Amino acid sequence: MSHGALNEGPQLDRSIAGRFAWAILLTALTLIAEVIGGFWSNSLALLSDAAHVFLDLFALILSLLAIRLAANPASDTRTYGWHRAEVFASFINGVTVFLMAAGIMYEALGRLAAPEPVRSLPMFVIATVGLVTNLLAAGALHRHSHDDLNVQSAFLHVIGDAAASVGVIVGGVIIYYTGWYLLDAVISVGIGLLIFRGAWGVLRSSAHILLEGVPAGMSTAEVADFIRGVEGVDDVHHLNIWTICSHIQALSAHVDIEPAFRGRQAQVLRIIEEKLLSTYHLSHTTLQVECSHCIQAPLLKPLRHRPRAGGSHGHPHETGGSCHDHD
Image (cartoon, rainbow, N blue to C red):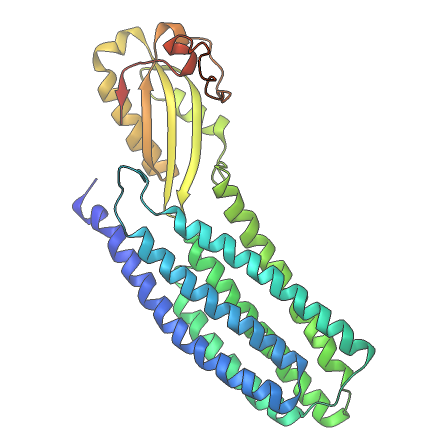
C-alpha cells in the first residue's frame, strides 16, 4: 500500500470534520430562528421543523464526536480502535429521528381535529431562512454523503429538514391568502412521514453493520468464487465478510492451496489480498492456509459458544485449528 494511501484516512477524517463543524454552526442558527419564529407565528409546522433542526444539531454533534473517537488508535482492549463509533452514532441518530417523527405526528393529529390560527407571514419568512441555511449545510456534507454512513445519516437529517422547510414555505403562502389553518397540521404530518422514511434507511444500514452483516452489494458466494479463481487456490471455506465502518471492510477465510503451490503459498495469499482490495475494497483481510483436517468444511462456519467451565475443550481443529496464518 502506498504512503499516500496510508495518509488518506486521516486526511479524509479532517475533511469530514471540517464540513461537520460548518454544518453545526449553520444548523444552530437555524434552530434559534425557527424556535423564535414558531412560537411567534403559532405554527406547528414551523415548530415541527425546529424539532427536526434540534435533532439535526444533536446528530451532527454526535457524528463529529464519533469521527474524533474513530481517530484514536487501536489498543489492547479495542483491537479495531473506535471506528465502530461512527456506525453506532448513525444508529442513535436513526432512533432519535424516529422518536421525533412520532412526536410530530401526535401533535399534528391533535391540530387536525382542532385547527389553530397561524401567523402566516412570519411563518413564511423564518421557513425561508431555514431553507437557505439547510441548503448551505447540506452542500457542506454532500461530498462525503455517498461513501460514509455517518455523513449520510447527518446529510439525511439536513436534507429532510430542507424539504420540510419548503413545505412550510408553501403552506405559509397558502395560509396567507386563504386562511386555511388546517394546512399547518397537514404539512406537519407530511414532515413526520418524510422523517420516518429517511430514518428507516439509516437504521437498517447501521443495524446491519452492527450485526456483522455482509457489506451491501456483496455476496459471499461471489467472493468465494473470486478467490477460487486465483491461480494456486483449490478451495476456500470458513469465509467471513463484514464492515467495520463505512471506509473499512474486512474478510477472513481458510484457503486450500494446491500442492504444486505449497512452496509459494505466501505469494498466493498476497495476490488474493491485492485482488480483494482492488475489486471489493476489502482492506482488512486475514487468510489462513488450509490444513488437511479442514478439507470438506462448509463455506460458512457455524459459530459455537465457548465450553462451560470443567467441560471438554475439544481438539484445536474443532474451534478453528492452528494453521499457518497470513495477515
